[in-house]
Length: 570
Image (cartoon, rainbow, N blue to C red; front, side, top):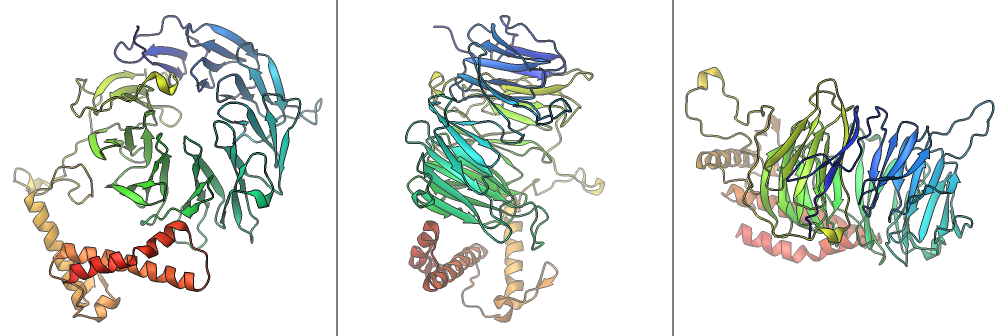
């Protein structure tokens, strides 16, 4: 049996080409390169059968088994394309245009049969964001958001609207189920003085009284809905464009949990700042969040919204699981330096670390062993090109672009999940190549007067990085001295970092809860903070406020925390 090797589709100013992945990296000879300078988009169908792209005034569809073109659509204004969940239909969108000869405009969202290019249905869809119809995993249900109404069609019969969801205003909806019964989340934006809602229904029971779960929130200019792969629960990320309190320039964010069994909760994040990334594990039993000020925290949560593992603090803002879910990549891109960490999700163990500076794109190969990073235009017009890596952090291949050419997009060929089963993870790095571009030095800067001398610290000694080698004895000693000095100042009510401590510890110099051990003092402070939160929750409960499931679970842990605090003090 021939080895299945995923290929890479590459789109740029020189057109579209296909090249094989590891180990050969050669061009796919059966695909005729498209040399058009106007290839505006490309995509694979979710089942991997088809490859479609926009080539100037046409949209082309090719079979991935032979790479032969089977359909050509003459649509010169199309600028976005997307396949249905099983790939049987291709959807195209073009801008809505009115003219003196056609003042009303015409349909510009079209659904085509992939195998032969037959037009199935057309709509007027003025919105560019979220333009594509939503499909269930089995393609037996299709929903289209037109203005503020959602029209539902069944069994690909677009002649009859089976059901309609009508509300004052619908901002977004997402179908989570792969098969019947279908579950759908609707986002209903609120007015200035009213809350917004996320309502979860079982199709087609759309009466407000029949909703399976509801979540309300006041601060939500934007909402992202993330279903897990099984379609049993979802995460709702709410964002505001501006924080009216002035506490932050970027606005406020919150993360909510909702499930088809009716459970809802707010995901408690214990660091202030932005939520940089949210991602479900492909195994659907846990999710990962990167949040807080840089260096940012990365926390793994279970389905009860309880933190089950901390990845420490580092300069990162992106999460990428491989298709099998046994490896997760945490990266820092954009305005960060391109650091990459690869983790074994079962053992919660760091596999490797590397750097891919100036990366604007990252994607896992369907084999779950390789990933590609790329520097693309228009984000960066200098040093365009792509690199292929092994999950042990080894660079295997790189393809730089000429200065006068631009790379726009790189995409791995898509395969069904069962083609590449999960493999045992090896922690031994494979053989690779050295990058052609010089890497930034990781050595700490030393002034001229200190050069040539032995130093007793390492760069980033104070970062909380799991999987990192133990800090030197000198670094540990220096850290303990700093902590002891800070604790002493707190006990004496002295200024800390240039500011006088005006809290309770500054008022009570003989605080009996503090010890001579800085590590114990940190734990005591952390437990006291949790107990204060529990006290506030109990007050809310007494006042008749309905608490979330995770908040009730916090209250149950009060006795356990009190015992832990007593043990530390004694």
